[in-house]
Length: 243
Image (cartoon, rainbow, N blue to C red; front, top):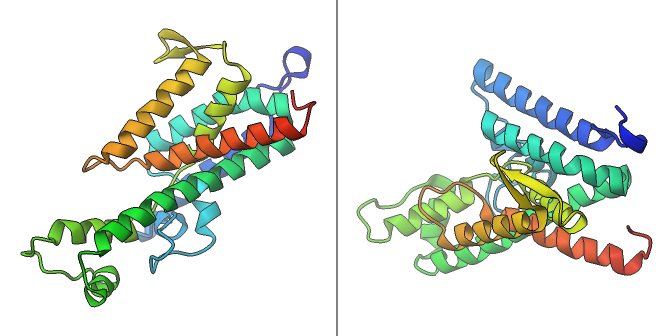
């Protein structure tokens, strides 16, 4: 659907990404309802040393979501920010950016989890770690029980969602249209550049706090933004006609 001067309100890559995400979400919901089989357990991204890790998860996790609100807001943001970016960059560069920021999100998430695991595992023997990871066995009366539970969670909790790529698109939007006004919560106007900074700071604080019960992969979001920033700077440096 074309608008002003060839501007598409639903460009090709954005449209197909939304369709693919919706199909995966529908497939997951159907399999859970009919067979009690959760696709997130297979296609979500596990820690690379987890017995449940498979290489394809580095890509497949970007197309899986946890619930209706999760996929709705990700797809809404993909359409809202991605439409402007794809119209400006073209489909090939847009898709490359989307996937690379998704990989970047996975990389930074892995890096943070790796250091968390190393710090926790120093309190246990190799035999204890092996039993914990593969069988979930550990003495619940031990003073180290909470640390053991944290290790188990890091190994066995998958990350799902397009949020890393979406945060990459948010960063690209803020850099491409810094003075464009966005309505926060549909009410409060704020320039895109400040919107990006605020969201980045929120993710940094959330990641550093690492609050109990917080199931948001904050550093994956930051990874999408970081790799998006690096990629845009690289393209601008090597392509004088980027804009």
